[in-house]
Length: 169
Image (cartoon, rainbow, N blue to C red; front, side, top):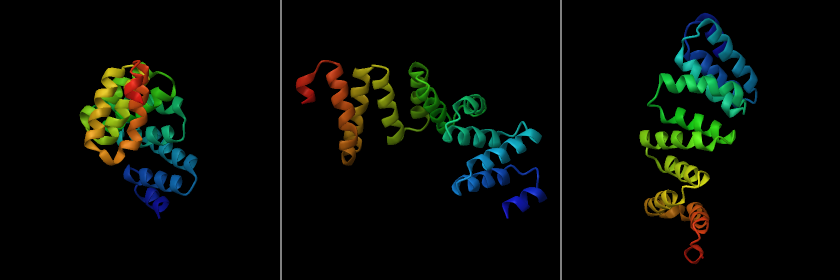
Protein backbone atom coordinates (compact mmCIF):
# COMPACT_ATOMS: atom_id res chain seq x y z
CA UNK A 1 0.00 0.00 0.00
CA UNK A 2 2.77 2.47 0.94
CA UNK A 3 4.70 1.61 -2.23
CA UNK A 4 1.60 2.35 -4.32
CA UNK A 5 1.01 5.59 -2.44
CA UNK A 6 4.62 6.61 -3.02
CA UNK A 7 4.13 6.15 -6.77
CA UNK A 8 0.90 8.15 -6.78
CA UNK A 9 2.17 10.89 -4.45
CA UNK A 10 5.89 11.18 -5.13
CA UNK A 11 6.29 14.54 -3.37
CA UNK A 12 4.84 13.64 0.06
CA UNK A 13 7.69 13.00 2.52
CA UNK A 14 5.49 11.21 5.03
CA UNK A 15 5.06 8.27 2.65
CA UNK A 16 8.74 7.29 2.20
CA UNK A 17 9.30 7.89 5.91
CA UNK A 18 6.50 5.48 6.80
CA UNK A 19 7.61 3.00 4.16
CA UNK A 20 11.17 3.05 5.53
CA UNK A 21 9.81 2.43 9.02
CA UNK A 22 7.81 -0.52 7.78
CA UNK A 23 10.82 -2.00 6.00
CA UNK A 24 12.83 -1.70 9.21
CA UNK A 25 10.09 -3.28 11.34
CA UNK A 26 9.96 -6.18 8.89
CA UNK A 27 13.71 -6.76 9.05
CA UNK A 28 14.82 -4.99 5.89
CA UNK A 29 16.30 -1.68 7.04
CA UNK A 30 18.48 -1.37 3.92
CA UNK A 31 15.38 -1.10 1.73
CA UNK A 32 14.12 1.64 4.05
CA UNK A 33 17.41 3.48 3.74
CA UNK A 34 17.24 3.09 -0.04
CA UNK A 35 13.71 4.57 -0.12
CA UNK A 36 14.79 7.58 1.93
CA UNK A 37 17.92 8.12 -0.18
CA UNK A 38 15.85 7.94 -3.37
CA UNK A 39 13.39 10.52 -2.04
CA UNK A 40 16.21 12.80 -0.87
CA UNK A 41 17.78 12.60 -4.34
CA UNK A 42 14.75 14.39 -5.76
CA UNK A 43 13.89 16.40 -2.63
CA UNK A 44 17.27 17.36 -1.11
CA UNK A 45 15.83 20.14 1.05
CA UNK A 46 13.23 18.01 2.82
CA UNK A 47 13.98 18.20 6.54
CA UNK A 48 11.78 15.31 7.62
CA UNK A 49 13.50 12.78 5.39
CA UNK A 50 16.90 14.19 6.38
CA UNK A 51 16.04 13.48 10.02
CA UNK A 52 14.51 10.06 9.29
CA UNK A 53 17.51 8.97 7.22
CA UNK A 54 20.00 10.19 9.82
CA UNK A 55 18.20 8.34 12.59
CA UNK A 56 17.83 5.16 10.55
CA UNK A 57 21.52 5.14 9.60
CA UNK A 58 22.46 5.71 13.24
CA UNK A 59 20.22 2.87 14.37
CA UNK A 60 21.95 0.63 11.83
CA UNK A 61 25.35 1.77 13.20
CA UNK A 62 26.40 3.44 9.97
CA UNK A 63 27.83 6.30 12.00
CA UNK A 64 29.96 7.72 9.21
CA UNK A 65 26.88 8.23 7.02
CA UNK A 66 24.56 9.25 9.87
CA UNK A 67 26.78 11.87 11.48
CA UNK A 68 26.69 14.59 8.76
CA UNK A 69 22.95 14.11 8.30
CA UNK A 70 22.29 14.49 12.02
CA UNK A 71 24.63 17.48 12.21
CA UNK A 72 22.59 19.11 9.45
CA UNK A 73 19.35 18.15 11.20
CA UNK A 74 20.52 19.69 14.49
CA UNK A 75 21.45 22.87 12.63
CA UNK A 76 17.95 23.01 11.15
CA UNK A 77 16.18 22.01 14.37
CA UNK A 78 18.34 23.21 17.28
CA UNK A 79 15.50 22.79 19.78
CA UNK A 80 14.97 19.07 19.07
CA UNK A 81 16.29 17.16 22.10
CA UNK A 82 16.04 13.81 20.34
CA UNK A 83 18.38 14.97 17.57
CA UNK A 84 20.92 16.21 20.12
CA UNK A 85 20.73 12.78 21.76
CA UNK A 86 21.24 10.94 18.51
CA UNK A 87 24.29 13.04 17.67
CA UNK A 88 25.68 12.71 21.20
CA UNK A 89 25.26 8.93 21.04
CA UNK A 90 27.25 8.86 17.80
CA UNK A 91 30.03 10.93 19.34
CA UNK A 92 30.06 8.63 22.37
CA UNK A 93 30.28 5.53 20.19
CA UNK A 94 33.22 7.16 18.41
CA UNK A 95 34.91 7.77 21.80
CA UNK A 96 34.52 11.52 21.32
CA UNK A 97 33.23 11.87 24.87
CA UNK A 98 34.28 15.51 25.31
CA UNK A 99 32.15 16.48 22.30
CA UNK A 100 29.22 14.30 23.34
CA UNK A 101 28.92 15.75 26.85
CA UNK A 102 27.62 19.20 25.94
CA UNK A 103 25.18 17.58 23.52
CA UNK A 104 23.72 15.44 26.32
CA UNK A 105 23.51 18.61 28.43
CA UNK A 106 21.66 20.40 25.64
CA UNK A 107 19.24 17.49 25.23
CA UNK A 108 18.48 17.59 28.95
CA UNK A 109 18.00 21.38 28.89
CA UNK A 110 15.50 21.02 26.06
CA UNK A 111 13.69 18.02 27.50
CA UNK A 112 14.35 17.46 31.22
CA UNK A 113 13.15 13.87 31.44
CA UNK A 114 14.45 11.14 33.73
CA UNK A 115 15.95 9.32 30.74
CA UNK A 116 17.79 12.44 29.59
CA UNK A 117 18.99 13.11 33.12
CA UNK A 118 20.32 9.54 33.39
CA UNK A 119 22.20 9.93 30.11
CA UNK A 120 23.57 13.23 31.37
CA UNK A 121 24.81 11.51 34.55
CA UNK A 122 26.51 8.79 32.51
CA UNK A 123 28.09 11.45 30.32
CA UNK A 124 29.41 13.33 33.35
CA UNK A 125 30.98 10.14 34.67
CA UNK A 126 32.53 9.41 31.27
CA UNK A 127 34.06 12.90 31.34
CA UNK A 128 35.35 12.34 34.90
CA UNK A 129 33.15 15.13 36.26
CA UNK A 130 32.33 13.13 39.36
CA UNK A 131 31.09 15.87 41.75
CA UNK A 132 28.56 17.08 39.16
CA UNK A 133 27.65 13.47 38.32
CA UNK A 134 26.96 12.79 42.01
CA UNK A 135 24.69 15.84 42.20
CA UNK A 136 22.69 14.64 39.18
CA UNK A 137 22.57 11.05 40.47
CA UNK A 138 21.33 12.21 43.87
CA UNK A 139 18.56 14.16 42.12
CA UNK A 140 17.67 11.04 40.15
CA UNK A 141 17.52 8.95 43.32
CA UNK A 142 15.13 11.45 44.89
CA UNK A 143 12.99 11.83 41.77
CA UNK A 144 12.84 8.10 40.99
CA UNK A 145 13.21 5.98 44.11
CA UNK A 146 11.84 2.98 42.19
CA UNK A 147 14.87 3.13 39.89
CA UNK A 148 17.44 3.18 42.69
CA UNK A 149 19.02 -0.08 41.54
CA UNK A 150 19.67 1.41 38.11
CA UNK A 151 21.38 4.53 39.42
CA UNK A 152 23.19 3.23 42.48
CA UNK A 153 25.98 1.72 40.35
CA UNK A 154 26.69 5.15 38.87
CA UNK A 155 26.84 6.61 42.36
CA UNK A 156 29.21 3.93 43.67
CA UNK A 157 31.49 4.42 40.66
CA UNK A 158 31.57 8.21 41.09
CA UNK A 159 32.19 7.95 44.84
CA UNK A 160 35.07 5.48 44.44
CA UNK A 161 36.56 7.61 41.65
CA UNK A 162 36.61 10.50 44.11
CA UNK A 163 38.28 8.31 46.74
CA UNK A 164 35.17 8.29 48.94
CA UNK A 165 35.29 4.53 49.46
CA UNK A 166 33.54 4.55 52.86
CA UNK A 167 30.48 6.22 51.37
CA UNK A 168 30.53 3.84 48.41
CA UNK A 169 30.30 0.86 50.74
